[in-house]
Amino acid sequence: AAVYNPPAFPYTGELRPHYVTPMRTVPKHIVKPDYADHGRPISEMQGKDRVVVHTKEQIKRIRAACRVGREVLDLAGQMVKPGITTEEIDRCVHQWCIERGAYPSPLNYHSFPKSCCTSPNEVICHGIPDARPLKNGDIVNIDITVYKDGMHGDLNETFLVGEVDEESKRLVKATYDSLMLAIKACKPGAFVRDFGKIISKFCNKKQLSVVRSYCGHGIGELFHCQPNVPHYAKNKAIGTCKPGMVFTIEPMINMKSWRDKTWPDNWTSVTADGRRSAQFEHTILVTKTGCEVLTARTKNSVPMWWEIEAKEAKKK
Image (cartoon, rainbow, N blue to C red; front, side):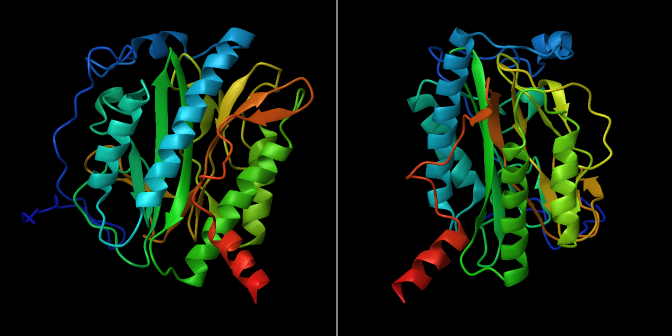
């Protein structure tokens, strides 16, 4: 491999940036979001303040985009093993999106250089896929958003690379459990600000902390819009859930400090103390009676470590 010298920077942990390949292209026949050519999401800058209550027809298209996102994430998760680079994962994600008639939403969004985000170890979010091979004992989040038939669908999961220490496994499970607890509370009339209370209460009990700089968000025709969904307690999020609203909940949970720093690439967010961070995300539709997880796991999803252990215990 070519020698890559990372920029001088007070890195908080052991991870360093690695070589990033040039931006990939998308065939002409794929319907693209407005930022695909120049990197500026103009429609989002103009329309980001209104909360959209979607029609049945719009929901149908969001549901289809979310299904494609789920397929792509499940395939990407199956690639995770020691020795594979996040660049290789990104190359496949890009291809899989195109094969399904979808545009990989992160690509050129505010000039982001890749088709998905890959965030190992102390990276909280927005990690850029690069030439660093994953190592046995790493954890890595893969965040997929696809744009299909004019709608975005967004989800992510944190995967274990080979044999991972118990503390990291606990962090990953607590993060997933906190997301699912918040989703349970999602129904018409629920305060958007309360999701953060639920997530924080659960994680703080386990001596884990909740990242404050990044939030869940409304999604649909726009990649990011209202409502803003913070994951920490005592947040100032406005509004209540209404049927037809679609948004993400995506808690980022850290082992120790909630504080973050950003690498010189202006994307990669890392924990200020260099300790590990995990994240899970679903896109959620508020229904008349509760909610529907549009990015729900399927039988093809990579099993969680606790599901594998439960299965093995049963065999014994």
